View: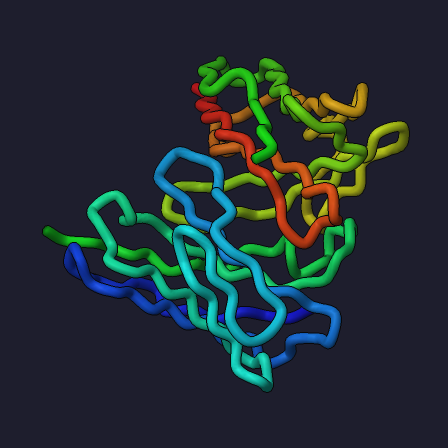
Length: 114
Length: 116
């Protein structure tokens, strides 16, 4: 079970690029890295997922180094509405409750200021 | 993307009563769904895995007799909090894995339970 470690909180200003790094030293060969965003009193929302190198979609980029022991979520030009908690999960394609892709760490609380 | 709904969005009940929370996958079938609990300013904690046609699998420390789970169909899972007490007050969230497996999930909007 790959454990993840993220900074507890980060502050940023509108228009800046924000990079949130997640450490997962025990990542297994079959594990994927998935990031979610959660606003207060809402369920988490899928942001991006990757296995290696770089993945980009319309809202974020995910950078994964060759050793895959960490990953960085990059949010370009953040706005006030990006203030939320961001979670990094690591796991393979399984349905068991012990799977890492179902285990949420403490997450990173991002605060975007005007 | 796929949509998961929950009902009710919030509920207030008296101590000792039972509360049922529904989780529905609106545009896809889900043979497996997951139930989480989240206390204020804390992360989500997986409670159990709901399996269509079979018994739910509970995480360590979660009382199966208190948190009854029924996966009635391929689009509906229910969580019943029996004999609720104030310490059961929490935010309950369900999810369903995407069609490719449990690598990523679609989450419901959550249900805020307050037990007086």
